[in-house]
View 1: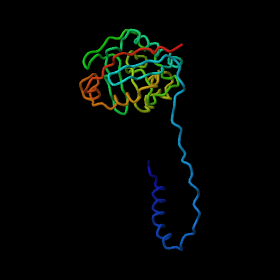
View 2 (view 1 turned 180 degrees about the vertical axis):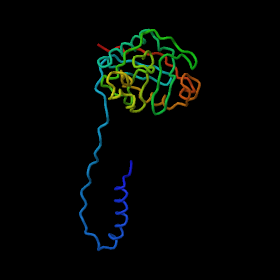
View 3 (view 1 turned 90 degrees about the horizontal axis):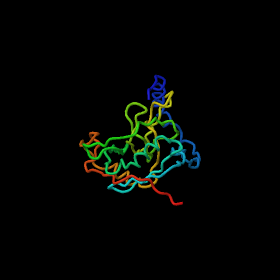
View 4 (view 1 turned 60 degrees about the vertical axis):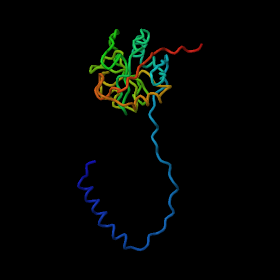
Length: 222
């Protein structure tokens, strides 16, 4: 914080005046106020999500996602199309950025990618969902409408990944389309594995591969 000249003068005045208080008579005893409750800001949260659920089966455990087909209909439809085609089965978690995200999508190994088939998805980052810890969002290229099969799970609250409030359109941010509702401990374990350079994102590739056995829609009981 910038210190003004007034601030420096005031601080020096307090330092000079301090000894005078020490030389005065004993201070009056004042009954202390009772402890005051700390003002705590409520933790940020997203509204309840409605839509299908997905099960991600990895070599380190299962992760359950609740999708939001109401607020992110195009993103959810895109993911479900890839799930239906079994696009993710047999791929790997190819990016682990500790304290940031875990990412997966179209890599079968550290050096072999898998072709995508669907058209890019229009960016839905203005849907009222924030990139909070445990949320799932579509990864994309630099342009706004470039997301395909790749997605990531936020390991922490990544507010910087939300749409810029000064954006006059929908050109910034990453579209949240779901939330981890089971297996966040698995996500955290994945987020803490050793990483190296042998992968599509140097410095963020798991040293020991983390296969994704399958991603499937969870059939709800009637």
